[in-house]
Image: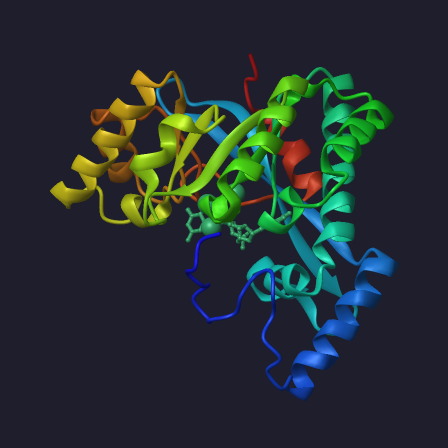
Length: 278
Ligand code: C2E
Ligand code: MG
Ligand code: MG
Ligand code: MG
């Protein structure tokens, strides 16, 4: 296994016994309750074909709607869910919810792929593949309409992770590698990964319209993706100039506030009705 640690220094598989703050203990208890009581909502952010300005799919993004504290963003509770193992139950709930909702949209005639974020921890859960198959069967969503977004952090155990991804792909589910370019060894291992799509991290998009280095990086990622038969999508597009720079460098797919923020189910449905879905 790789020796490197997360930014805050904890070891993913062997949490150090740091004294927990009271706030943290309260948070964990609240999160446990929240999972039991299903205090979560899935928001959906459109994925766009920039060239034709059409919707190609959507990413499911979880929000915790706490009865007193209001909406808590995922960056504040997903890491806790991961460290405590609660992500296993929460992740299953999110996947079921997203597949169920996508099936509803399919039945309404909107044939779109839903992308669901998967934590590293979930990749190493014993029954992941069975759980996914079960959810697809139960929701009657065909595998081709589901995509799972993973990050490079899942490759702490390279062979194990690759084997799991291979099984997932064998079902017909697409795999996308999220936040691409932020890991330390992206280019050296990308060729051996069972991945369909590379999602270029927002940090390269932020300044792409006036930074030649970011342009060069995007161009390089696009070139590599093409030679490996993978798709490319950019995340965090906020400006027209960024979208234009992406297209100039060969990236036609994107996601970001320029097109739409993540939307609650009702709002996403309104968006669907207005959009020309092919
Ligand atoms: P991510 O998967 O890389 O998702 C992209 C994040 O960027 C989302 O934040 C999205 O709302 C935000 N975003 C989208 N467009 C723009 C833009 O134009 N500008 C800016 N500044 N931000 C934009 P969000 O929803 O807060 O999620 C943050 C992270 O939390 C996600 O990053 C993902 O790693 C994690 N996450 C969210 N939902 C889930 C989930 O259901 N399961 C798991 N395991 N992780 C999740
Ligand atoms: Mg994602
Ligand atoms: Mg991302
Ligand atoms: Mg991210």
